[in-house]
Amino acid sequence: MLYDIAVIGAGASGLMAASRFQDKKICVIDKNSTIGAKIKISGGSKCNITNKYLSSDNYDGDKEFIQETFKKFDNKNLLNFLNKNGVYPKIDEKIVKGTYFCRSSMEPINMFKKLNSKTKFYLDNEVLDVENIDDIFIIKTSKNTIKSKKLFVASGGLSYKSLGATDIGFKIAEKFGHSITRLDPALVGFTVQKDQFWFKELSGLSVDVRIKVEDKKCEGKMLFTHKGCSGPAILTTSLHWKKGQISINFLPNKDSYLPKRFRQIVNKLNIDLKDYKFAPAGNFGYTKAEVTRGGISTKQLNKNFESKYQSGLFFIGEVVDITGQLGGYNFQWAFSSGYCIYN
Ligand SMILES: Cc1cc2nc3c(=O)[nH]c(=O)nc-3n(C[C@H](O)[C@H](O)[C@H](O)COP(=O)(O)OP(=O)(O)OC[C@H]3O[C@@H](n4cnc5c(N)ncnc54)[C@H](O)[C@@H]3O)c2cc1C
Image (tube, rainbow, N blue to C red):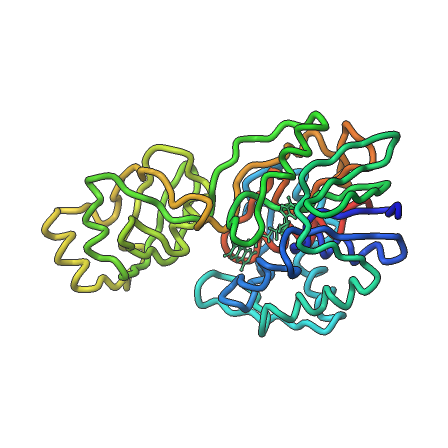
């Protein structure tokens, strides 16, 4: 069987893209035995699907490329699309401003099952290699050889191997002449150096902070852990931090509350509560990172996500060098790119 389109990845971007081409002979290939593995566990199983305050400022990557995509399909378009298909996310701002959550993350997964009723799924199939011979893509998986006229690579980043992540998207890109920007775990906690070992004594405690990193400010909760620090403010900071110092303001608001245990330790150590500077040792790595920063350079993609080097080859979602902050921005990017592909 020769497919019109083969999609690698049954995640957010691949499912959205496949749902748009039900009039074609289309298949989706995934290493996992079920679809939407990351959607399922995201947002405490309620999937933080988008954010009210969407803008290209919420992303690390090519602003113009992001804006062009959101002009075609932004947060309002996504919410309309979901509503039209029976999913009604609601705002819940307990952790991050403007976040929309579903009642259950199974809602979008079930929606995509319905929208992909014509899609042939090859699950439990790990893609190992792709070739293009006479304008046909030959996709070798652990179980099959699949042929298609077009190939959508929606294989995500390197985070959470346990949910199917592999480097196949980057390998395919390189094989067809693309460059990959530096890849790093992002939206992830920091490990610390000796001077911050006092964080461990506060493991489990969280406080409100405002963090300065490069020219960015990240606000929210910081959680002390036995390995260093985490929590929403730190996860967002990790998106912008490459190396060097960050500065934490532990008194971001007039009515900032500092727990007794925290006060005792910082008093003893004489910590500057408004401008505590330190350089993280590193981060918790891809096993804990929600996303991968970096990816396939947008400079080598057309506005419809097609490769400038190989016609019929497209890259969408997290595999592209565009990474969102915490708060629904990464699913929005995955869905927007999946919706706009080939348009
Ligand atoms: C724990 C966790 C929670 C998150 N929560 C949120 C959230 O609430 N809101 C938000 O916006 N973002 C969240 N994210 C980030 C978000 O899940 C991703 O940015 C998004 O899923 C990326 O979509 P994608 O389609 O590009 O890739 P993915 O969803 O990662 O899908 C890629 C698919 O490709 C498959 N694949 C990879 N390699 C191969 C191969 N060689 N052969 C076959 N198949 C392959 C994988 O199995 C996977 O199913 C979270 C991430 C994690 C890890």
